[in-house]
Amino acid sequence: MRKFIRPTLIATLGTLLAPLTLAQDVEFDFSGSWRMRYETLKNPIFPATEAQRTQSNDRISSRVLLKGEANYGNWNATVEIQDSRAFLDDNDPTLKSSQVNTLEPLQYFIRYKDFNEYVKAITVGRMAVDHGSRRLMAKGVYRNAINAFDGVMVDTVVKDWDMRGFYFLPVSRFPTQSQLVEDNKRAFDKSFSERKYFGLYAVSPDEKWKIQNVWFKESDSEELATKNRDLYTLSVDYSESFAGDWKSNIEVIGQTGTARASSSASDITDLDVNAWMVHAHLGQQITKSTFLRAEIDFATGDNDSADDEINAFDGLYGVRRFDFGPTDVYQGFQRSNIIAPGLRSVTKIGGVHNIMVGYKALWYHKVEQGEEDFMGNQLEVRWRYQVMPELRLEFGGAYLMKGDALEQGDYPDDSQFAYTAFLYKF
Image 1 (cartoon, rainbow, N blue to C red):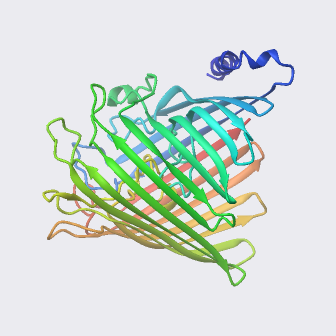
Image 2 (cartoon, rainbow, N blue to C red):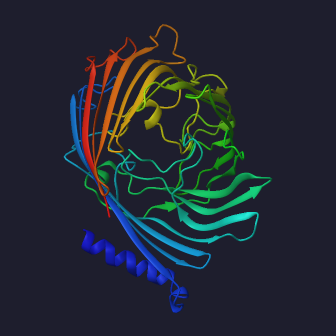
Image 3 (cartoon, one colour):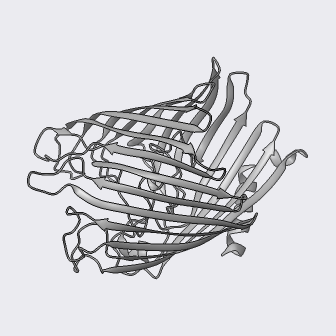
């Protein structure tokens, strides 16, 4: 695989940079990584029948990233290829294109840096972006396939505030048919002009305030069936340190606009959207190596599909692993219709070991009348061991002591999940 991808990467980068390669001052850089992970789950989190899925699930996932960069003066050109595959996982309805993306150009963009004292960079092309708290837009780290966007991004400085404006067409991963995904078949991903994501992100000079204004607009086309979402989302994120070793953070996100209840072509009713979420934590450095914090996550839900309003929060292109636990095989909990207080500790030892232990109590924010709302208690652990600069091992797991809301279906017993992985960088 590597023997095939690397020449392809070099050829693609060479084509993109043909005008620049005539210059003698072009600097090239090539890097990459390979992650292999094994996951095992007994008893799915959410209620299911034997006809829908089996009681146990095992998966091996592989992700190879190869990046080539060329720098000439203020110019940078980048090409990155992603090869994400899954094995051992048969007839699993949770296996989607978010885990499998075979031999795909993940990034190809041109960037001009230091345009003037106000404009730090202008980037045009396809790119993967980590943005703010990563709750509205992120690449994805744990998940096996990475989000990408086609468009333009401008990084500026205005009165000492770092500001980023962007206009993106989110890239949809293909294929989407279950059997093709299971067989690791490939098809080129693409974006659609009918689906747009744009906005402005600002960071204060002291980095305490982070503000995001984002708009998401989509409509149907011959190739695209959507919920016709037309959403405006505002995030205000504030962090503060005090009393020496105490740290706090709160992010409040409000969301408004219109959307439809489904992506069916027969659904032409636009419903008002009013939703919000809050994340907050307060913690202290309790020892030289350990930070302990109390945290809470709250995202609105909707318990009435018959009314004329949608109250379920839409996480758009954000990721949730760092708030709610592993995704992929474990699935984890959505940032919607949830109340989740908890505790989390992170211990770093000698720059080699990183150990995280987390606990969450989980409730649905809203349920239909007569239904249970307590989902259970989740304990999560993760240990990263940096064997050498190029190689990191990771071990982790989660145990969900199910509450009444999830003790249903054919698998009412507690969920048990474990994984092991390595990441090699070159």
